[in-house]
Image 1 (cartoon, rainbow, N blue to C red):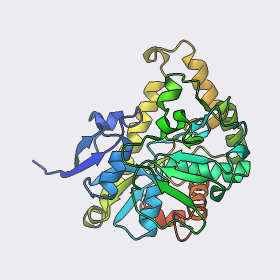
Image 2: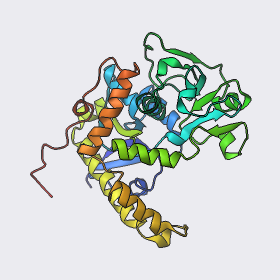
Image 3: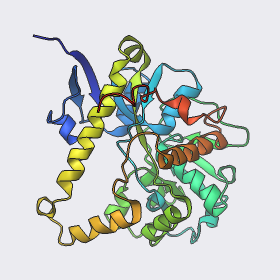
Image 4: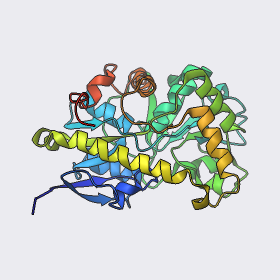
Length: 325
């Protein structure tokens, strides 16, 4: 009986990865132990700080910082999580904040400063709405996944242990918050808290039409020692994740499996706006543009000392592109 390489993969449980999680798609020659129960922040911390997993879905912005600092990780261009973020700017309704520029001079909370969602939002606020990050006083709830030296002029403080951004926002101790998740006060319809944009979807579609960017949140990271010992693992995992996504997209086209009345209409609208595969993997022209935007934001915000080249972020997968299927 042939032996397979045992690897631990920490990853979110998404439809586009589920065929791989459930074993319906198996990476050739690899025996995966898959961990899906932890939240994203915990997964990123344990991978980047503790090196606990061989492979992990990891924050794209934190991965940029890791590469900039020479930490022992590589990645393949698999993007398990993307999301528009305009709807994740929250405000206290008593602070007179009506437009993005009203955020200037305010006290704004974040989960952690280097979270991909927050890097995207700070970049969008600066480039699209004229709100520079040094015009704001920032308060971070968590330690950073990777320590970095804030640039001169940046006002960022760590909240006391146990303090939650969403609670301080509701109490008015913070004026606004940028957060990667749908926060409790919004779910509970607390009148003290609202979204900055009353129609975030309209803002997000306008942003996409202008820039062509559907923001990438996470990449697939590999510990460097695993990659160096088994360089074939990168292309094998890429192929498996791509096969899983293809199977999931084929399955999700069937409206019978989704309990939504107008599901087909929404699916067709998505295809008209974003094309047949908004979740595409690989260094396509569109993905390069998105990643170049993020690397620019990370450098402009002082998270990386240099603007990283996209080709330097990912291991090569194209050496055999003329061979095989």
